[in-house]
Figure 1 (tube, rainbow, N blue to C red):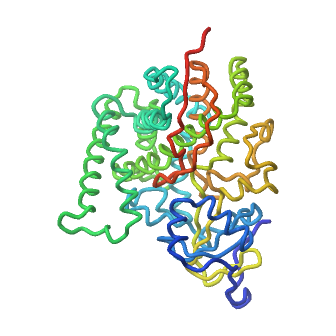
Figure 2: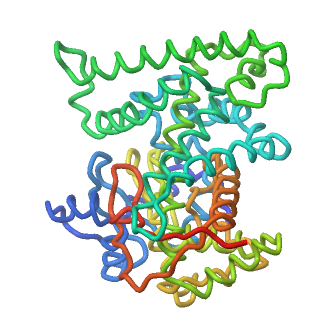
Figure 3: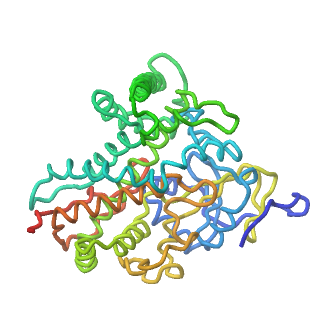
Length: 442
């Protein structure tokens, strides 16, 4: 079902919200720490669409069905817009996250080329190099958490592929970026701290941003000094060569804003999905055996199906949010007022047996030879604000899994499934994705 711009509020009728739970401190805590299970329980109790008060964002309508996702993602952005503009606290005014409607599309157009086709394939060698470098340090036949390693791999990949960083700037960003992103996420969550007063956390954030901008300026100077500047594939160089539709160049500050956005949105989420992949495969020896055999044969269909199933069964980002920007907006049988949020509960849809039979089982075959349904499978969101780096993340996971499973044998385990733990941004394996490996014998 495709929804066009809502009718005049007089014709839409009065506000009509779905039922939901009263505001309780326990629900606030569970939304932050146990969200997937909590939302599933509320959907069972109140129905597939319900109203609840969400920390930071206020009262929200939570939707859990693909048909409702479809309807929401087709509503114009000036009617139901993204909630991300406040993220300029962290990313800056030049970030794509801080843009709506035409401005969002203008910035998205700049960032699209490096994430598709030949540009995307040019990054594969970087992904393989950084993977081999990291896994050379892995202990053999000793249990260890894989999540720190996947975090290191994906950080290095972004710094090289997106920032074009190497040498001193690479090392400085490796130290600064994770600390700053984590600190910025904390500031975003606690709005009273976003004030500039003596000894405030905000001043620390501003100091980190100045340090980051200094590194970016040095990287820009290095890029311009490269005799092969016009052919450099990194995103920083691409932005330096780009202009907006009116011919104006992208400012250095806005380049920094966009790179910060790509780092924050694409580093930890992909690393966490990879940690879940190893956690899932080590507990499911038959899919693991089949996957390794396919990789050895140079095939990729089952590998792609496995990635889709990992992201279905263990979504790292539980959902996306839209905010009503008109007086009253219809959504399904409900009428939602101005300023209220709509939250898409991805994990609930991913575990609904009407969408995915036997949802609690790990079954890559459900995606073999076919792409996931656009609205039942939404780990990257949907609509005009779907994650711009989805193809890049998929490429990373493909190359990293293929490289590791060609180098090591992942040893099966009968340990219980690791719990889903909230890590500030993603939902990660509670024990870090503990695995054991041994070298493969040629």
